[in-house]
Length: 347
Image 1 (tube, rainbow, N blue to C red):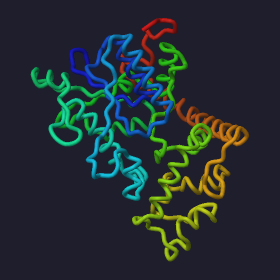
Image 2: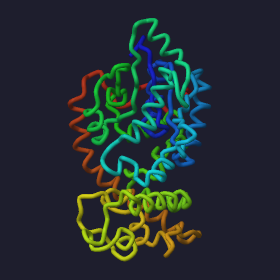
Image 3: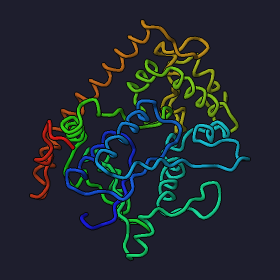
Image 4: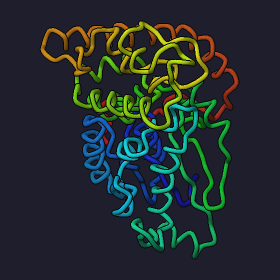
């Protein structure tokens, strides 16, 4: 990547933070670092973003460019949550699609680089884009996909280039797994800089342990997510009716322990409703308000830790064999951790 014009797509999570460290250790400085603000991240993610701004300033790197999609005043909303509420629908990921990511993340980051001539998102081209045009070169977008099975699957489905950019996945080039990313952040910056998973508080990809965590730390955000789900599944696009399912969606949420087998999305969890999960697990009261208080908070945290540890234990057992295979198939120049990444070495 030496000599190329580099643009980092920063998500403020573990992988993208490790990506910044990999570039620093390789003495490669990106021309722009973009972060798409959906106004839906957890407060911990935004706090991590601020801390990384300070790190980048210390390195003499460009600050993170925070991108946010703007809408016309008559639209009636200016973020993804408002979009879902107004249209009485769920994020597209709940239906197995990713248009919400393209619309609210990818496009605004592209506009931050290329500029936008008209509309509420009008802006000038970034200097890196102007330089690329003058030099007749293509900008390389760097994306923080690691060597875990899920990210390998995602990256294989993506093109290596589009009309404007080339795409590279440095963590996969290095052979770094998610655990390697955690290790490198801990070694270079300290364990306090290992961020939580970056995602919307109503992300359909959330695991049940994350829902317990959200109930404990941000009950107000979980309540907003439950409202969004209720609004969508009882709204004008709802496919649930008493004839096909034997009861309305709301009746199933309130009175059943599980939804009947169906091919349609039943909630934010795709195959399960967050509202029903919250009721069955005693997370909410009869009015679907998240329970509060130190006793229930401690229960939520304990349950989150139990589920997370169980999930990680299963993953690690499976990963040991796959990691051995990965190491055997890596090119000789690949390595898991660079020799310069040692505790105590300041960056």
